[in-house]
Length: 288
Image (cartoon, rainbow, N blue to C red; front, side, top):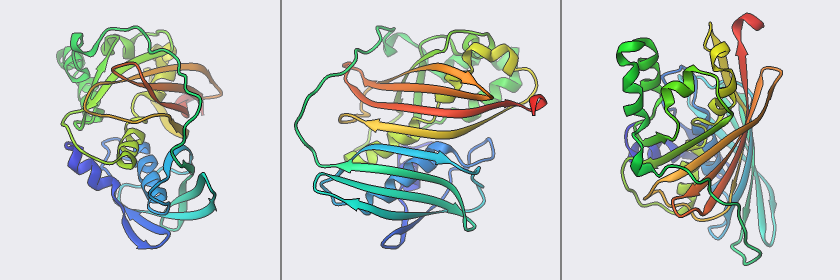
């Protein structure tokens, strides 16, 4: 995925009837459909069935089966409720007639009310950091195999700046905290629904990795299988991709081959714009 135009085209689904939509796949180098793609496309499908004055405030999804890159994905939307202030939709994503993902999303009229938020972490500003792509250059000679793998998975449409050095973070055991600045590599104009969909797409990068950080030395031995199990997003405020966003992540727990991670997305001024939570599988093949 190289340009924001390509990403928007990927997320913009073809409509088959009032409640059914179809989407194509980003050819992810790891060989399965990218979870962030399904999150964003399902939100797009739901948005296509709600009134224009309703804005998504939350979405909760479960990944049921790994998606096959060779087949398009059909999104079936159920109208659960059309209320005076809230609208609820359920979306089931299918390939070859089998459900691979389901999601519930809630939409709300814009309303005035109480307003507070937590503070953004006090960390190094993005201007004083190199990009993740620049940081992994140190591996080019030391470990070409790992270098190529990391380079493949870093999307060109986003620029990431890891606050802690990415090479050490992925090779040595550390604390379950992960602060990453992110922005799109080119400016663009889009309405809030599409900006939320792009945020949903981006939110699946680096989150599960946060749960691996205390265990890198063990997990790096042999083959470890990673897969998203569920993913939730709460949209709090307006999203602006024209400047850096901070994705502040932590992992309170890992157990039973599952890792749990949370994320807070702040704009550069410290405004909390979204909260994210995810649980994922982190299973070493020799521990089946």
